[in-house]
Length: 199
Image (cartoon, rainbow, N blue to C red; front, top):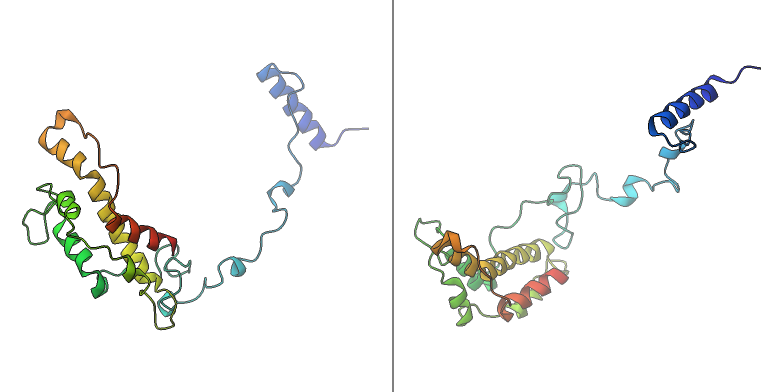
C-alpha cells in the first residue's frame, strides 16, 4: 500500500532538515491544518472591544476619553487637542509662552537665558493643584479633553525644568557634554502633573 503524499512529503522534508542540521530526530512535522492560526478561545466581536468604533468622536461628551478609538481618527484624539487652557491656568500658560529658546515674537525665551528654573524656584508659578478638581464638563464629570491639555503642558514644563541644566552645560561647552539635570520637581509642577495623570 502506497503512503499518502502528505506523509511522504513530511518524511522527505524531515530527512532534508536532519541532514542539513545534522541533528537526527529534531524535526516535528508541520500541522496539516490551519488550526494553529485560530484563536482559542475566540476573540470577542470588535464592537464589544471598541463600542464607539463607528461613532463620530466630535459628538462625544467632554468626559469621554479623548483617545477613544474610532474609524475616523484611529488611535489619535477624537477632537483636535486644545491649544488654550482655561483662565485659571493663565500663570502656566504665560510661563510656557515665555519658556522656548526662541519665543513666538522672535526674542530669546527663558531657556535661551537659562532662567526657567530660577524663576520657578523663586515662586513665579503658583501651585494650581486646587484648580484641577474644577475641570469638569457640562455633565459634571471630569473634562478629559481639558485635563489632557493641562497634563500635556505640565509635562512640557517638567521636562524643561529638569533638563535646563543639561541644555545650559551643552550650550556653554559642547565638549563638556550634557551634565546632570535637576533631580527633583517642585510641588507647583509635580502636584498638578500627578493629579492630571491620575484622572
